[in-house]
Length: 231
Image 1 (cartoon, one colour):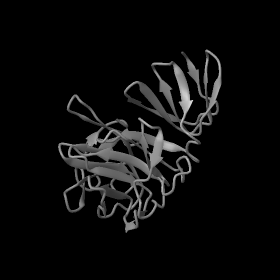
Image 2: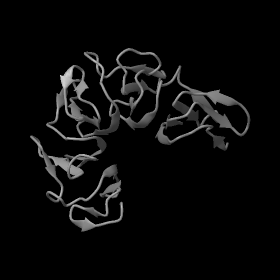
Image 3: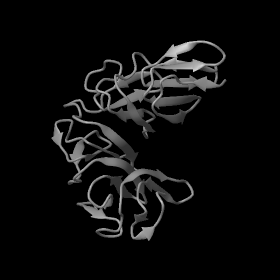
């Protein structure tokens, strides 16, 4: 049925199996068929029952997105500092869709600032970006990577917020408000896509499409030296 979300600022969706997960900045979801579900910044719609459902006490602040991990868990990220009261879930938490339970991804120490982007490589390696400078007691500069074994590592330095990440042909791309706005990982350092000065404003979103293309959106009018109006 049709759904309304009172007081919504923004929302993102992810389909996993027979469920549609919604994350963002909201406090309840109302089905027009009747009934309001209190849900703090995360909820799921069950296609089999036709109902919206809360997930525990939810998130204590906004979620910016949710990404399905290779192991079947959902990585939820944003500006929250607690996911259903579970310890060490500040800014990033793993949700098990089979049990509706959250767990930490940083057992040695919580992340210290907002996570704004998550991406996975083809071998299951994870990449996160945002405003963070510490992950799992490891010092980082706005971007970090996690091995399949769960080891977190810094990825050199980006000097301002990372707002988007994508992996294409085993190359990691980052976009944001850092100098030159659009970069790729060489394996040892960040390099500017198209060279210094080739992108003239922020990259805020990336989509790695099945059609073979990487779609990039933001506030720029030139990207990698090519004239383009924001996408």
